Image 1 (cartoon, rainbow, N blue to C red):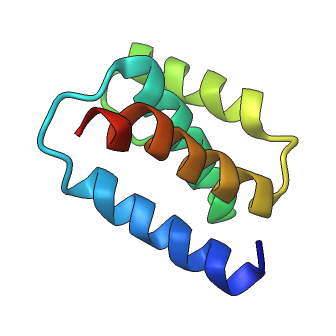
Image 2: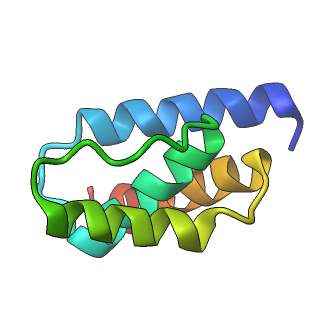
Length: 88
């Protein structure tokens, strides 16, 4: 997959998630969060006011920190396709 197509597919998947009308399971949300943060090189601390949520987000990000930006985008798109688009 070339970089331009990957970026387009990633942006389409992000838009799909942002407009998704059904509840997304927490484990899927955490993976999407981590892949999104890695893909956008945004390693800022989670901004939740709830310490437990911050801990889960930080853990998800730690688990994904060693993948490349391109692999994070591919993983995000793949997860959206598998878990959300297939259920729509």
